Length: 430
Image (cartoon, rainbow, N blue to C red):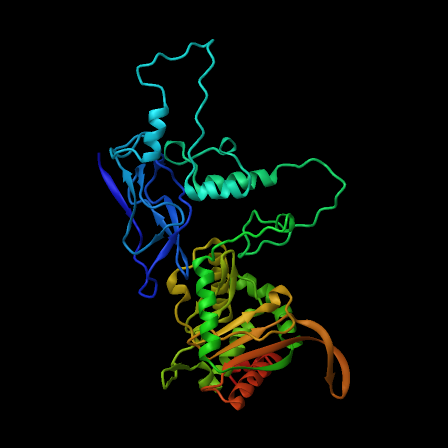
């Protein structure tokens, strides 16, 4: 028997531990080389653990939901094993031994075709699975166990609960509520009806990503002197330029011309004029950065993440649009790498995607400022003494007053406003 160990990948220096998500293979399953076996969630990203060799899934050392560290053994692959065969010669687990004792002896004759088959014993559920089944009134007979020796795993239990919720219910005359949009903080099987039925509570542990977001937001508010300055922008010039060139742009560069690249370029325009807004605090020192790495806040199924556009001053509009599109796809698929989220000297948060009119964004430490972009709406606008209707966006810039004075903050936001209302400034660097 040749066993290959499956270990936790090397985590970054800032990540001490991670959580195993659901295994994609069970003991006895065939495994192909480079096939993803399990995902591991850190406080920043979700890492995929591939098989380093082909064979059969052997012993799974660490179960779903376990806390693990770098280079820790989590499973074994039997490269000589056969599908469905037991991959290790270790002693049976207590639960499996108990099941073996209850089974008929090996030498007992098989029942005839006419004789009734003996009743099967109830499948054994893992502790986490048993808890989920009890909370959702699901019996063991309703769940097909995929774990070792037919044991019911947490994933099996969650799948059974979701299937039960999806089954058609008897018709009644009681109106039902429309399902709420999916949220990264609400379990998929927790509907509005379920939450309001019987005044029950459901306790769900925060994901590591959510814990990290909470930690950094508290850190930001407790360590920085945060103020926010606001301004309004007439987006008509940007919209006109975009409408004029978007077809040619897409044909030339293979990517759509969005609005975010304009906001990134406008932010860069202001950061060059006011370097303090691109700086950060380190103890009693101010660190002025000789580069412009702008974080773009992106919503993912697991929560808010902020991938970094590096050296924005060297990027074209097309480069920015392509990079943002790639980040969005990676975030949706949970494939952002740690290096994608590390660093950054300034951030942009686009609440307008969800319809926000105005907000006060929170600084992403150790950065000292963040731009909040909102929904562009037709609003009254005074132009040459006349009230006209223009597409207006309210910008908000939060800043750390420890190093950025109100004057620099206001002027920096005004510079962004000027760049957006006269896009030629961005192109000519005026």
